[in-house]
Amino acid sequence: MPTTRLQRTAGVAALLALTAGPAVAQDSGWTFDLTGYLWVNDTGVTADTPFGEASAELSFSDALDALDFAYMGMVEARNGPWGAIGDLLYFKLSAGGPTPNGALFSKVEAKSEITVVSTYLTYRVHEDANVAFDIGAGLRAFWTSVDTKLVGTGGNPTRDFGHDKDWVDPVLAARLSMAFNEKWFGTLTLDAGGTGDTSSWQALATVGYRLNQKWTLQGGYRYLEAEWDTDYGKASLDFSGPIIGATYRF
Image (cartoon, rainbow, N blue to C red; front, side):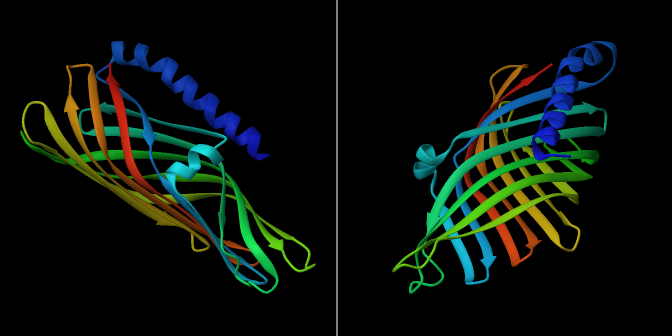
């Protein structure tokens, strides 16, 4: 199935889930949190080529110019100790870096389009007035297209190397939440998984403030890394930086 069709399928599924959410909440004990956020992230792209390892870095300030489009959102449903979480990331951007062989190439140019959909089923193993601890398992799906270009110099031709791969990693997750008082709280989430020729992990730490029973503001730091096998060796992506968001509960 083409990447665009997979992305459309994931988007339609998410839309149906969000549309059905209010009706389910009214008829059962489920509650729903919808979060939109901005991830002020730096991006790193590394890919093996026949001429050596090529890497490119892109700071957030540079990404504002190189970013074609991005979307980030999360939904969480909870009923008693059980919970379900869905997280969607989409990036389309370009980055640059030094060449692995200065005698043949002047620079590296990398263009990437990445869609990441993570889903988890969680269970709350501990909860008291100040602390809650959840464990979970799920899947993280990647649709990646990374085009690495070695720009030729001195008459040497420019070389292009594609690193396209779609895969799904099973992941294990844990989340610790702590209430500092009635308004302020903190959350730490970790997850990791892989299949052998692919792997991914992420960490998210936030501090939140409850404006009222419906709205919450959060800010913190997020890191996500993925690595996969290619025809030339390995390729990897990493995203890291501050994150801010707003959550609506119903």
